[in-house]
Amino acid sequence: MHTSNPIHHIIVPGYGNSGPDHWQSHWQQRLPNSRRTRPASWDFPEHDDWVAALDREITAAAGPVILIAHSLGTITVAEWAAEHASDRVIGALLVAIPDVQRPDLPDAIQGFSNPQLAPLPFPAIAVLSRNDPYSALQRGRLFAERLGARIELLGDYGHINHESGLGEWEQGLKWLDELRAADE
Image (cartoon, rainbow, N blue to C red):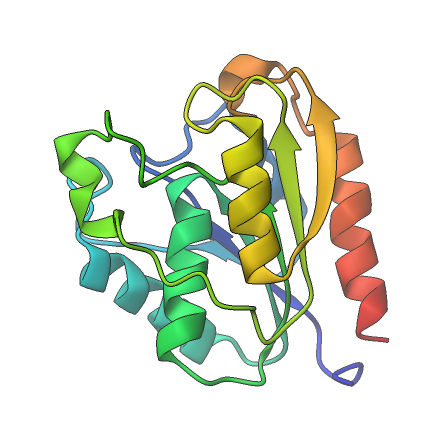
């Protein structure tokens, strides 16, 4: 239990970062104690750099942490958890887990093509779309199951990004509240 300290929200965007119309950017403005990972490059992601960027933010947080990851950020969370031990992370919202093992994976993200998909040491909710162009639903489910995440099916929302038209995405905030409540 971490109720004496405020929860810190760490936004973990995917490949290319999350622009101003993305729900992650709206949440970063709205949620208290929120910050975004800062890898060296959003467009040329390097595995070790992205994992280290996440570790820096977790280490810098002065209290319990909830990770809010999208796309390649979800794989970064899995990789971080496999390589680091920390009781600071109390939960993770994993949105639009991409299939980083698909044959048409862009060259820029090949460094993430062999993910460590072990059960996470903290509660996680994986939110999947039925028509995600970067992950067939059965692959997203498989990755989520290997991470030990509870699966929530959002419907037909593509890659659950700015193009999905979710705005501040109130349903996602409800799942985030569930993660917060689990720590109380």
